[in-house]
Amino acid sequence: MEFDAPRQILRGLPQPVLIIDRYERIRVANPAAQEIFGTVAEGRHYGTIIRQPAMLDAIDRAFTTHQSVQGRYVQADLGVEIIYRVIVTPFFGDTISGLVLSFQDITPEETVGQMRRDFVANVSHELRTPLTALMGFIETLKGTARDDASAHDRFLRIMEKEAGRMNRLVDDLLSLSRVESEERMRPSTCVNVAALAKGSVLALHPTAQEQDVILEVHCEQDEMLTTGESDQLT
Image (tube, rainbow, N blue to C red):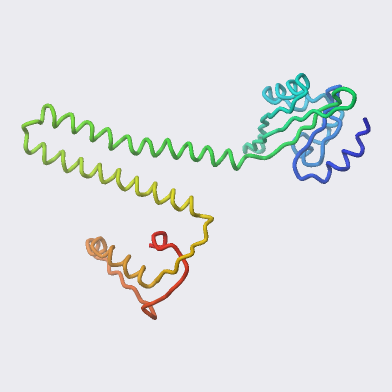
């Protein structure tokens, strides 16, 4: 097979692409692939260039089954991992002629996925702590402190505090979820920003007063309209 034509075509592709021939040698590495594997990749056996077992297994399966296979390649670049989803696709002449490996950078997706997993783990920990405290107090009130009125009052105050903590956490989660789900939705309702600002200051007045803070709203007019979502603005 003549490889000059596909080499010229692949040069224009922004994503890394390798062509491995039937003799298991890399015949074409476009410029994007050369940034990963170097300019000496062409002509060498793929096993000396792609040294990650999972990726080598995907290539072997594609050669054996003559079916497209998906692999994963991780590039360590100055301490930063770049993760690629690799589609290994056989191409044919009279028999199998070789494989095309196309690399898609999925690092952002992987990063977001890990952030979500960390977030869920942290939230679970934050909820477990007050729940554990509440369960402990309930057991105590049912047991040794059953007839202790002073313990009842003390534990109920702590339980109220822990329940409030959980409630605030749930409210924060709901707000975050709502912002995330609506981040690409353009608001369609008209709101009065001046009224929202005055309402927010009024709601914060008791807290501000406790801290000896004076909140004032200065608006040039009573009605300042714009398109927006009132809860998010508040």
